[in-house]
Image (cartoon, rainbow, N blue to C red):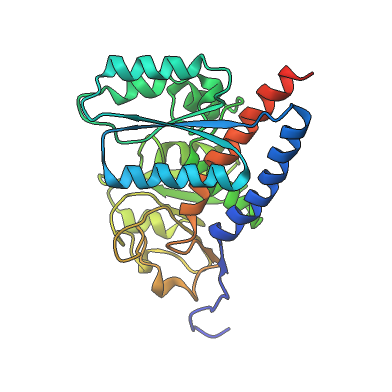
Length: 292
């Protein structure tokens, strides 16, 4: 065996393709549900507080995804001056609305609002974005819960491409409550050995070198260097920054790793897709229970 760099034809973990395939399946499920329930359809309520243009775009994309699979969406727009009490009141109203099957509160909310209190006010049965403490706790205990959309989307993507997780060493860089932490627990539940790193980690390159599976979820452009990643690893980049780069320096890795998520088109499409997937699931449970 020569000492040259091993050349892999890396498998592209194509989130766009898997999301499109899932949408076809969901369209069929929604149509079947409509037929068996006198036209009832799963409905996702999206709450947008304030006028952040990026948030407005995300909410619109989520609404469009609902339309593509034949689902309903209920758009709730609230002014930037909204108080915590007013937002809690709106969430309670949606919790009590039998026709709403999923509730999404778009992050971030204006700073005067207690975001965590509002997230946790969402009923567990309608927490299709996986943002409540209860949902997180249930997921981490291996109980039934809707997983946080981005990490759950990553798990679905790895599953779609039959990426072996059991017994592998996964290194997650990032510890945010909606990405790094739930990601680590989902990988642990899939029998991976998990190391969680973050901005205060010492010897970060040495730890990343051990990774069979590396998940970049740190929110800094190309923070994770290609030379830190070992040959044959599986690279999952959950970052997206201006200029179309992620959290991982990807270009030098393309012929060294066994699989990677492209940026864009890898993790991104799976996030909204998971939200829709989980709303359809919630809607099916509720609507089928009513019609049996």
